Image 1 (cartoon, helix red, strand yellow):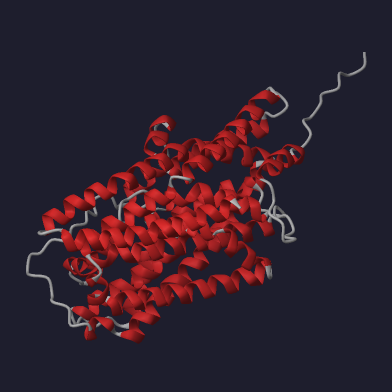
Image 2 (cartoon, helix red, strand yellow):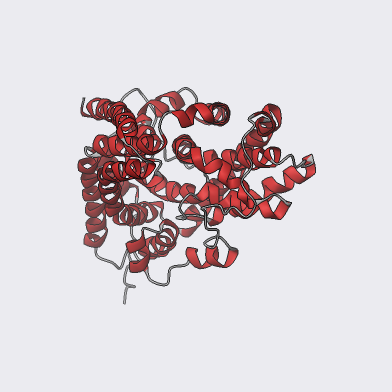
Length: 440
C-alpha cells in the first residue's frame, strides 16, 4: 500500500509540476524572469537530489562489501564481472545499431528545416572532462574518502572490491561483528533511502516545473518530430531488452518491469540515475535478486551499460550530419558507433554525458561540433527518456546475471524481503576454516 501511495504521489507531483511550469512560463514577462522563477522551483529538486547523493556512497560501499563477502572468493567475483561486461557490450552494440538504423530511416535532419548555427557559435558543452587519461585516473581512487565525498561510483567500486575480497579471504581471522556492523550499515542506509523517497514527489514537482517554466510547452511542438523519433527508438530498445530478458528469465521479466516502475518514474522526472539507484536496488531485492549481485552489477552498469544514452548518441550524431547535409557512408557510420562505444565508457559522473560524447565524437568524422546546439534545446526532455531506459536496461541486466549466477529466488508472485535476503547472505557464507592442532 505504501509503495502504491508513493507512486501515485510521484505522478501527482509530475502533473502539478507541469501545470505550475506552464503558469510560470505564461506569467513571466521576460526569459530572464522565467529563469528566475525556474530557479525557485529548482530549489526543492536540488534538495531532493542532495538527499539522494547523501546516501549513495555509504549505500554502494556497504552493499558491495556485504555482497562480495557473500560471494566467497575472487574467482566468483571475476566470473560475475566478466558475464556482466559481456552483457553490457552486447546491449551497447544493439542500442547503437537501433539509433543508427532509425536515423537513416527517418532522415529528420533533412526534413525538419532547422536553422543552422551561426559561424563560430559555441556549444555550451565542455569536453575537457573526456579523455582516456582522465578515465583511467577516475577509476583508481587516490583517496576513498575523496571518492565518497564526490560520489564517484567507479572508484568506490574498486575500493569495495579490494575490501570485500580481503574480508572474504580473512573471514576466519576477523571478528564476525565487523561484517555484522557493515550489514547493519547497509540496512540502515536502505531505511534512510525509504525516508528520502517520500520527498520524491516534491522533487519531481520542482524538476518538471523548472523545465517548462523556461522552455514552455512550445519547444515540444518545434522539435516534436525529433523528440518523437527518439522516444520511438527507446520503445524499440525496450522491446529488444524485454525479449532478451524474457529469453533468460521467462514470464517473471514482466513482474520485474512492474516492480521497477517507481525508480523508472523517478529517473524520468529527475533525469538522474543517482536518484533512481537506491530504489532500484530495493526493488531488485524484492524481485529476488540477491544483494551480493545487485550491489555489484548495478554500479558497473551505471558506468558501462547506458543503453538509452548510447541509442540517443547514434541517432543524434547522424541527425547533426543530416542537418548540415554531410553524407556519411555506412562504413563511416559503423566506425562512429565503435568510437562511441569506447567514449561512452569514459564519462561516468560527467554532466550531460550523452551530449559530451557526441561533442567529442563529431570532429573525428568531419562534423561541426556546433551542431550540438541543435540538440541542447530539447536535451532535458530527451534525457528523461534515456535515463529511464538506462534504469530498465540495468535492472534486466542485474536480474539476468543473478539468474546465471544462481542468485535469483524463484518468482512466485510474492515480493521478497530485503531483511530476509541479508539474513540469507550470512548463511550463504562458506564456513571458516578451522585449524586443528596436531596431536603430540
